[in-house]
Image 1 (cartoon, one colour):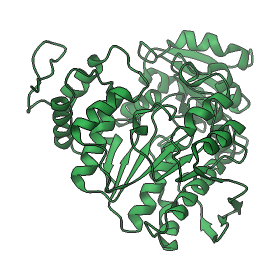
Image 2 (tube, helix red, strand yellow; image 1 turned 45 degrees about the vertical axis):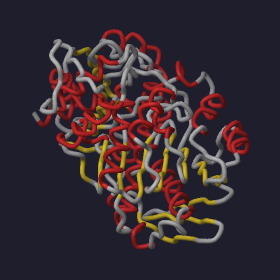
Image 3 (spheres, one colour; image 1 turned 135 degrees about the horizontal axis):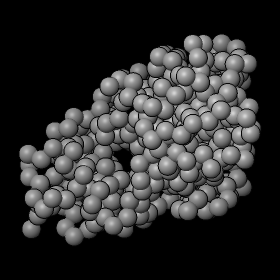
Length: 432
């Protein structure tokens, strides 16, 4: 018999419960915030008769670039006239950002309907917060009758909740050292986990020019139809555009993505390879590519807001991409860094990638249990900074931004980075 979930305060959630009530309750349901594995979610999905098989599925994994790639794929297919669902994580400001249908975040009421259906079906299965969201996305996409659902992997690939669905085509963007407690200590180990989204007889795209050999070996073992950057497709860069070159087709003079940087061209290369691989099933005209690329925007990815440049980079590889963007945007001018990071990130390597472009650093607290205190973060990165680098620690974002502006002076540049939480807090502070 379906049961009503109990809120942290003891009262039962009913049909009129708010989205905030549901999300707060979901955080208490499973004893661990992350619990990889498909057993729990598969049992509940079967009760919900998910996943639906009418929609084609694209799954996108990778250490960096998977969010931008997912948004670009959504935009291309929308420009081509398709009815598209997009599932991404984490959100920046509002949970609704995670589930989009035809470019619009789902409404609170629709999310609550999905959560109610999941709760009625789950029995005694203790789902995680992410598993609840994944099931809600699939349920809402089925309700909306989307033609294509694009799923961004949350963590890894093989055991991630999104891997419940057999993707018609899958993309792995880049492979770096992140979430090592869960995925392994080397790129080779992590590559095997990410290749878990590949399927036998279906297209698998490796967008990184030199992926670990284990990715290739795992794709071969699975029997996926692997297409590799540099062998089956590639890009040629120009000052104002780029070329995409495939085995049977070439797109010359494509406009640059709306998010600047070479990394976004790399991401676009993989997405276009996906689109080409599915042309027989979901035809996309060249005009859709040319229209979508310059319109790409993803909040928190090199987002300019007043005197701030905000970026959700949180690992060493992403910091290197951010450093290239700073160099391009600000020439030889240094920046003031506002930095807040989670405990399990490569703090010293992150700051080392940016160090030569820094004039000063302001460290800011992130909330427990995973967030670091500003003083602890400062201590972990001192070896990556010069001894005379101006530094301050702040326990809130408003003070951190004020201190950064003081360091920067009237003509300085301020970069806020280190975590989705850091960027979200900065945006809330500026907009609030």
